[in-house]
Picture 1 (cartoon, rainbow, N blue to C red):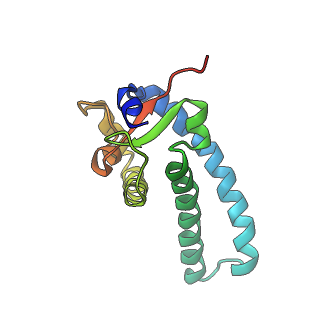
Picture 2: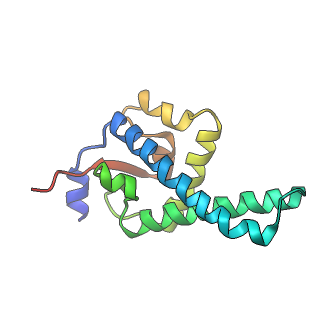
Picture 3: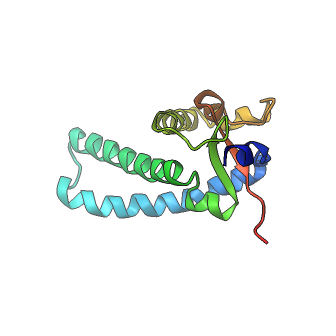
Length: 145
């Protein structure tokens, strides 16, 4: 798989953006379901500790969602739809360290007005900043015949 993944073309910027929009819909559903589970346990969340616990819980759920897909197949559901796969820079599957680094860098970049995404417009390989730093890349898979 390594040689095949290296030969694959990078995923175009607009395709990655479309996949992220679709992914946001799926993640919204995941967060809703996760919220229905924790709210009866924590309560109405009037106290600051309850809100912080809820935020950490949701962050953990999101990390579990993304890392499980990235580590297993390199594709979330939205990435499968748009024929995008996340691989390490050499074409192998991601390591757990890369998944953790990519997740938190992408989150941090989103919190800074999407700087990690806008970076792709000036990057020589059109990579997102979090992919560049984590040693990962998004490739476009060919259509199945």
